[in-house]
Length: 113
Image (cartoon, rainbow, N blue to C red; front, side):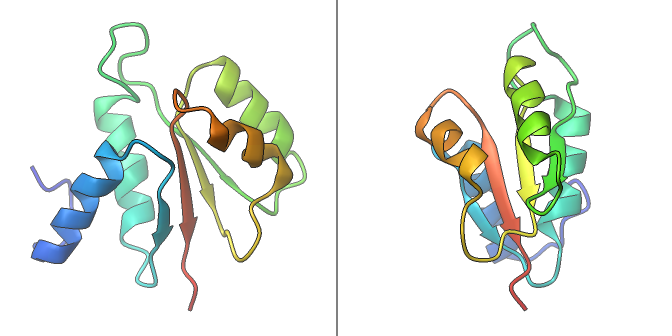
């Protein structure tokens, strides 16, 4: 099921790598294809295969939001996937410690036009 992704083999290969990555992938997405797809993917399938949080949506926030740290803390405590969009150059400080943890699922997204 393509979940509204273009039928391009490179896009599909990247989607598989993104979802099954062991570390936080940095998604460079100039056409803005993967952010809506990733949000929809977690809305449809939940954030994990466990029965503890079936159908759990990911927390999506901009790295420029004033309450980024609070949103990340809440997502971590709720064991939710975190999608941080608008990443330009530096990783925000609240993410650095979380990125070190292998058990947390974080996706870093940028358009980098």
